[in-house]
Image (cartoon, rainbow, N blue to C red; front, side):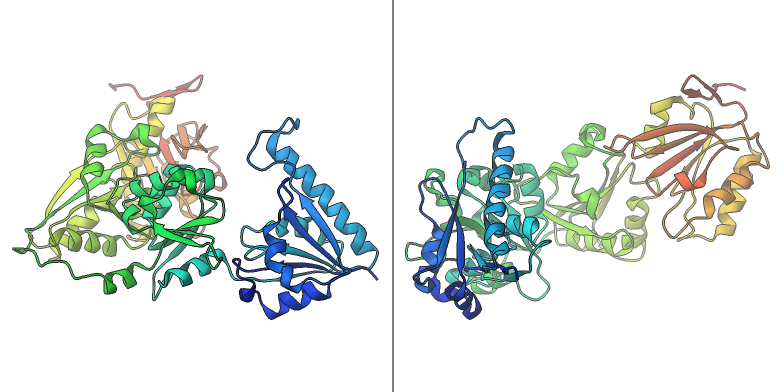
Length: 496
C-alpha cells in the first residue's frame, strides 16, 4: 500500500484559524513537509508547530533561489523547476514506502499555494487529498472589519507581478480587488492603483491575523518596508459609501453633459486618431463593449462601464443617463462608430427621449474595410458598397436584395459580419448571389484581425471562396469586374 499525499492549508497565520481537519492530519502524518528559504526558517512550520508530535519525519524543502540571481543555465525558472522535481522525488520515496505525507501550505493550497507544484507532479501516481484553508484575502477583510463584496459587486484577485498597465486596466474594471505578491512589486501596484483612480480607497494589510500585523492606507506605505506576505485591498465600495459622511449637496443641479461616440480603429493604439485619443482622455466615463473598453488607456479617476456585445440599446441609455447628470461620457466602438456601431444606437435612444439636454458628438475612426484595403493595395479605389451579412437586426431577404442590387451595379463590396458560430450559411448564399453578376475569378480579400496579433490577409477568388475559413473577426472585400489582382496587390482603377 502506498501512502496518501495531503496538501494542507494552514490559513493566514494564526494557528487557531487552522481547520480541525488540518490539525488532525498534521498530528497523524508520518511525514510533514514544508518549504523554506535558504536561511532555514519556515513560516508554514511555525504555524503548524502546535500540532506537530515527536517522531514525525520532517522534510524541509529549501528553495535554491528566491529573489537573488542564479547561475542555473535555465535561469530562475529552470532552477525552480529542478527544485520541484527533486522535492517531488523525495516525497514520492515516502509515499512508495506507505507513509502518508502532509505538505504544509500557508493560506489555501490551491490559491497561489506552493503545494500545487507537488500535486501536479504526484497526484497521478498517488492518492492526493487537498484540505482548504482560510485565504489571506479573507483574513485581511476580517482584520480590516470591512466586507470584501456584497450584493452584485465583483471581486477581482490579482498578482502584483502583472505589468502596471494591465493591473490598472483590471483594477479600473472591478468593484473590489485584492492584489497579492507585493514585496518588490509594491511601487508598481501603487502606480496601477493611482492610474485606475483607486489609490485613495486602497488599504495595505501585512501579515493579517499574525501578532505583528500591520494595516495602513496604502498611499502612506514606504515601499522599502513591504514584505512578500502583504496585500493591497479594495474592499466593498457599497459598504464604504454607506459608512462615509454624506457629501455636501451641490449648489445647483448640474447642467446636461455630453456623449462623445469615439471610433477606436480596428486594433491597437497606432490606429487611434489624435482627436479620438484626446476625447478618451477628457472623458469621466468610458462606456462600451468589454473588449473595446479594455483597449482604452487608463486615466486616474475615470470610471469604466463594460458590457456584453448584444446590449447596444442598454449601453446607449446608460451613457445618456450618465451624461444627463452633467458628466462627460465617451462611448467606444471598434473601427468607425458610424459604421455598424454605436453612433446609430446612441442617436436612436436620443430620438426615443433619453438624455434630454445631452449633447452628442461623433468622432470618426479608421474602418475595418479601410484597414483591410490598405494591406493589399487599393481595392476600394472606385465606387464601393458596405454591407453587413448579419441578419440579427434585418431579415435575410433584405440582405439578399441588396447584394443582388450591388452585384448588378458592379460595385466593389465590403462585407462585414460575414459569419459566426450561429450563422454558418449566409456567406455561401451571398457568394452565390454575387456569382450571378460577376466572374468566379473576381478577386476577394479575406482579412482577419487586421492590426491585431492574429492578423491574416488572404487573397482568393469569388469562385474559390471557402466560407468555412471565415469567421466573425473577418471582413471581406469583393472586387468589381474591373478589380485586378497581381502579385499580392489588389486594386480597382479610378476610371472605367
